[in-house]
Each structure stands twice: as structure tokens, then as C-alpha cells.
Amino acid sequence: MAKIKTFEENMRRLEEIVDKLEKGDAQLSESLALFEEGTGLVASCRKELDKAEQQVVKLMKGSDGAPLETEFLTEEE
Image (cartoon, rainbow, N blue to C red; front, side, top):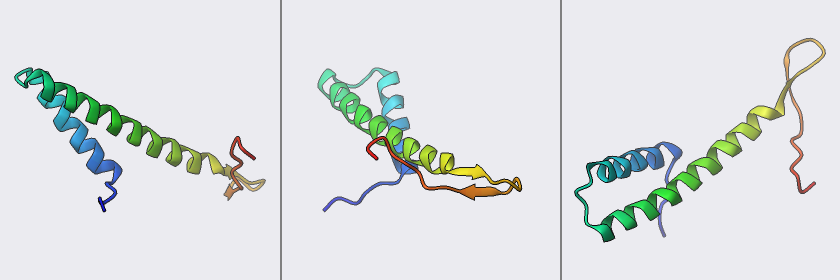
């Protein structure tokens, strides 16, 4: 079973892929494989960022100005 990578690990790998593609010395087939891997990493990172944003949005100010955590309702609810 593959280990689930962290956001930071995915970003580092994405940076490696971009560097390799920018050099332009990879074979076409390798470039396509790297591009495909990169698009998957972008989707994974975007999902993590969306999840983090939802957690931040849950925090709202209460009547006394202090942060108040409220239940987050998804579009499905």
C-alpha cells in the first residue's frame, strides 16, 4: 500500500517536475509522463487547499469579537 504524501511532499515533487520540464532535455514520452504526474499532484494540492480553506471559513467572530467555531455546512447538506 502506498504511503499518502503530505501537501509539502507533493509540492516539492511538483517543483521537481516543473524544473525537469523547463530544462527541455527529457524525451517526449518522459515529458508526457511527468506532465500527467504533475496534473495529478496539482489536483491533490488543490483539494488539500480547498479543505484548509473550509476549515478557516468555519471560524467566525462571536458577539464579543472572539473567534467562534461554527458548524460548516457543505453544499450536500
